Length: 134
Image (cartoon, rainbow, N blue to C red; front, side, top):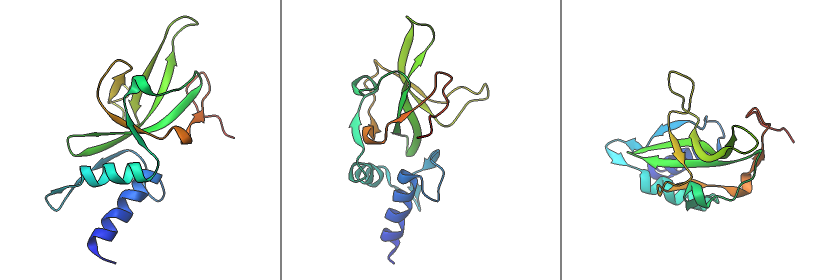
């Protein structure tokens, strides 16, 4: 297997979450920035480039997403965080957390920053933020 084939295979494993935890992944390899390659592979895997505000999602649902920023791929979820019956917000929250346990990266619904989402892989979640197993 050629080196480029191994790189693409590794990227595909990150995207699918197979054999590799979806988290934060450095996209620099031997001095080469693989951000563009990662973006192409995301689209090939069914992810769509969009903004948080454009993601169609209801309460108690999450969609997987990747943020590509500064030669890193950040995995996270787009979801609606509900505070009260009348107060909520849609956001991207990274799997990576800060020292307080909050999302290290949060992108609000009104941001123009692009993310890649896979709406086909939408999953349910409980009101407390845990996943619904189907």
